[in-house]
Image 1 (cartoon, rainbow, N blue to C red):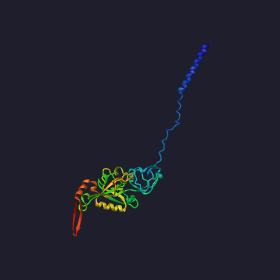
Image 2: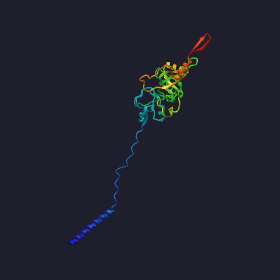
Image 3: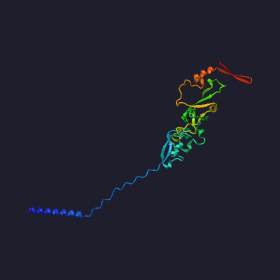
Image 4: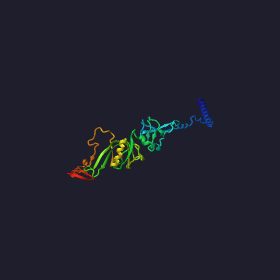
Length: 287
């Protein structure tokens, strides 16, 4: 009897389980839950920015600009100053060698009205120090130090001339003397920029003229010396001389002082004197 009851309970439980499973299978599927997380919206575009060139450091008035004297700064378009210089290749090339009219603080924007370009009228006069003059002399590959002289160098001028045979004996016909010392070069040909690079550099090109910054009296000496003989330039060291160099004097140096052979030849010829008697003149040699 008990066994029959257990079998019946087991059948009832099994039927109930099968019925519940059938109802679950026949029940319509529940709709998927609504997507709660939407696709992330794209970030807003960054605000527009304007770029301009500004002073990289404190720049005094009269500075000849170089590439590392200016840098780029970004600002809001509404804050872009009028006349600001954009960081284009053309603007950079224009700035190299330009001269500032007035002092600029670090980070101050460059303005086209703040500088003079080498081709602008009055640029050379603005480069000159107060009371100075500019004078040019012709040079070649030798007298111009093989084209290695640049604007901003300090040079000495040496005049070499040859006296006539009737004016001096053989040992003293060639004479050289330092005409000017410590003179600033402000231009080589038409190049006035410092630190020029790229297409502006004078590589493999021999200079034909050098422009010097001199006083009025020095300009007169250069003009006369250029007519007397050959003027050569010698570049001075950047560091100032601490002591005079032996043999570095401004006195005249004759051919006999350089060549002992020429000195002996002059002594063998003896000294000569030009004697004038009335309308006649002759050279008298003393042996």
